[in-house]
Image (cartoon, rainbow, N blue to C red):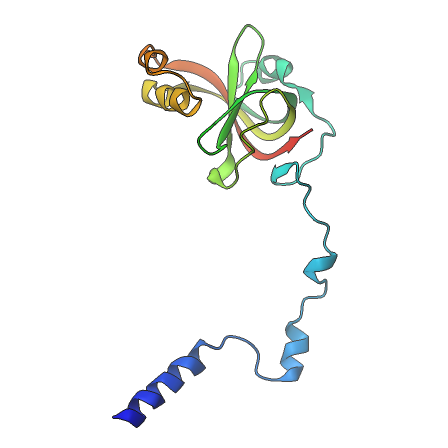
Length: 170
């Protein structure tokens, strides 16, 4: 019984090995470019790495959209607020006292919670959508609003929203 257990353990260990078994295979499997030589992602870049080149002022977004419901754009503007729970969204000021919420594609990245008032570049899809009351209340809670302010949210709102692939904090 003791030998059977050892034999089974040996088979299990052998089956877990996923690497090459010979030196020739080792060199063939090595990447052509070591990871250490690839450029590091800047500390101020989140999600996909983007540049500020070609960014349009966020105030121009309503004009850029026109009658369309959505458009792929790169925008630059000032961060108004950031989710204080995780950094999972930010808001930017639009004309006529409107605010645009920026969320992050596939919930795959977050931004620092202390970037309110900083200039950011966002790249992705801008779109119009009706935001339900429960979602508006959730955002208000994440934004640090009081229970009274949250309870005052009773109607859905049509808003411009943004799904960002990348964010660059300038």
